[in-house]
Image (cartoon, rainbow, N blue to C red; front, side, top):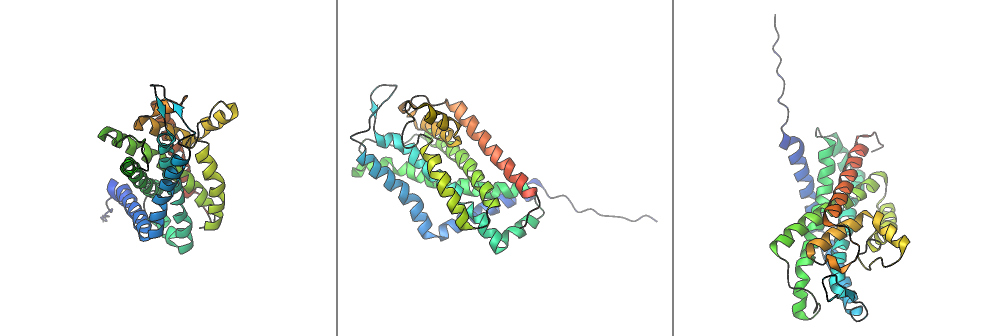
Length: 281
């Protein structure tokens, strides 16, 4: 006597990857926009930094451009301020990993019948997308400040090609930084501990990328900048904005993109490997 057995169909690609990634990305945006103070602070701080430092150092900072002429500090600092948004937003979005663990949400996510890579990518894509939106708003609004006299030496606007290139560079950089934050958040038990480690790591990482000042003639500083993965995201952003001649010795755009992509892939791979290990969650 034969017994008929029916097998449930295997979930498709969208059910296994697309749906969990999109849901986790949406959750990051919902949590972000529900916190109004976080929205204001994320945009106000880099704008204030950029305007105040640009005004204060405009008379003492002049960098010769390779194409002739000179570059003001506001022009030089513009990609660095955008990178500040990407760095802080993408990494601190990983705090939700600690909060979700304490609230029990992470246990439910890990028990879901979906690949771990989709869960990791959902968290990282959410943080990178938040960083992308904020950095784009800042870059688009920066030239408008020229009209009210806060940025008199800024170029007017960006072309469609530049905007598309900026989207790619900002998202790729944000993905790598979100992955770095995820690696720390997965191992740290408290939000306070995460803030403590990130406060020691983030600001030096940003300063030593060439965002605020060029490396100059210091050999050891040049080596530190060269091994900093954030330096290559900044270099790519300077290239696509069109002021790559403002800093001598920048790596080429293909090299900058390759390093940024490699760092992002490495962080994602390490994140997936960590979530597959048994833990005390």
